[in-house]
Length: 75
Image (cartoon, rainbow, N blue to C red; front, top):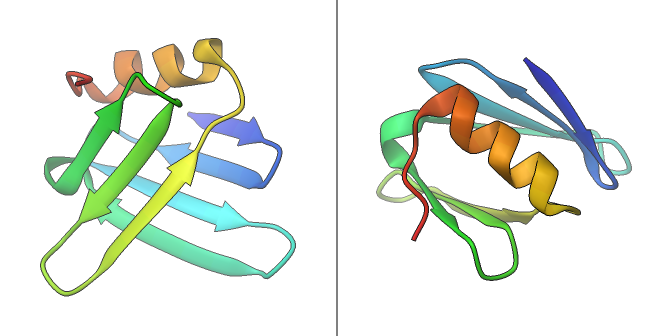
């Protein structure tokens, strides 16, 4: 599934999320097991040990689509 948001797009599979930031041409990816989602602010946080990143989605609908596709439980 591809989910577009104001900063770029997320390519979401049941096992991985890849974040492509359009303005900087940055690509970040993380295994779903390393992702946390937070309802407050619609934030996705990846923590894979030494690599960490966060992204804020634009709408609750985008956030819910991400949760449904990955099965992640939001906090």
